[in-house]
Length: 109
Image (cartoon, rainbow, N blue to C red; front, side, top):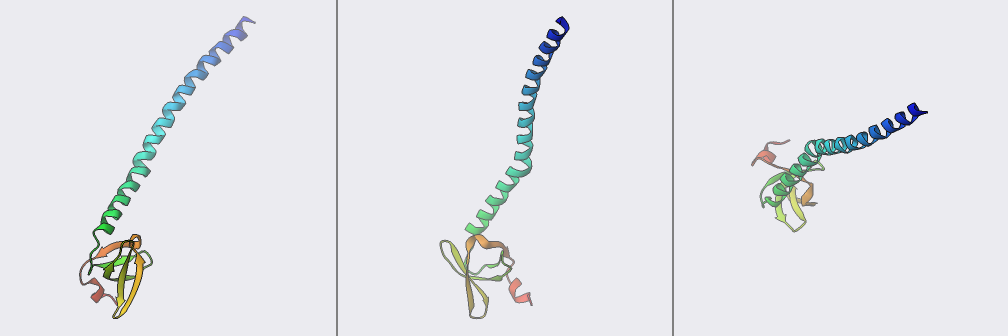
């Protein structure tokens, strides 16, 4: 009977130790997630916001739908793109993926 009581006391002490190590492991996991997922995503969001804020009339851009055009008008939430002579479309500013080098639209097919 004495051996059983000693064994139960040892299990209780081991359980308390594993709870502390569980919190340490969760903390380490969160740090790994932060540096591998959350931080790079925030960096990409900042870069895209800076790109959208720097748009100017006359810039040649491509949008997420695959259209490429020259900006003719910039609104508060949208831009108008000239995709062909006399053909303009309006797209959301957030859909602009990147600014193309000047003259790249004249070279395309």
